[in-house]
Image (cartoon, rainbow, N blue to C red; front, side, top):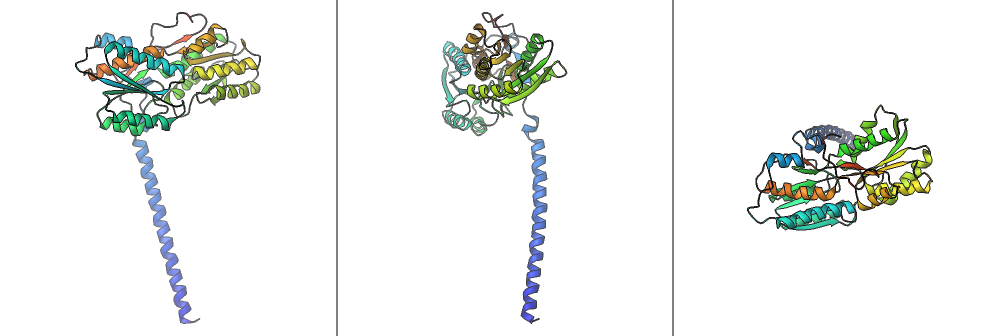
Length: 362
């Protein structure tokens, strides 16, 4: 072999050895980086995320008033903003109206904004970013998911703005939460089904948007309460808070399980879609449908004998409570991290007198 060929072959072997060594080092580095990432995730707040339903210091609003006294008189002029999920859903309209009514009574300025749809996390983030720039004393926020408002939340904290998470989706590290016990919501629905169908049977769950604390908690409360009971959950579908999507999902479930006893839905909009599917299947009165929120159309449907019931979480009252909690905090009161607002199962039996005496445990 010519000496030049020996040199070329030796160079190629040397080059391959260098590449192999580099790949081995790269693989080792990737493994180390992956291990570091896993360790970081294990130590992150998400691994021990804020869980309002199980917050040991939580109080009902009545207990809060008993412990901290009447609302203090504001020593300075405050300005509030409310970041709603979506004002096309009457639930969020009621929540905003409750906030507005209490702010008017207290002489507090309030700006209310909302996303264009109930599934518009990016749009909601953009609106909240602009709110933060206005320098409000407090922002009452109802995120669309547990994470979509995180960049704006960090900016608000850096600016010293008080943030109060009001109902539904929950920031993983929320400093304050006002709303119902979401797990209890599902428990109440499950107990109704157990009482209504003591002989057992099949039931289904129509969930809201994935990645939302309230969706997981409401559904889990329902699931846990039925464990070992005579009722079996045969289907769980995401309706994404949308009437038409819930209707379609329910229609498919009814075809697959014609003997279905009932549906539990994470909100009333979806429940009303499910009612349409039940009517189309000719099963009105045979298949029970329980929703969540307590919006006007749900009450109308209950009175007509179509929707079986709703877990009303009284958003108007929740909005008023949120404003009062924000004012107490701004005035220096050291309140618990969570204040529970009331909720109750509403059926034809109590549709005209729905607001309960609050119970922390169903």
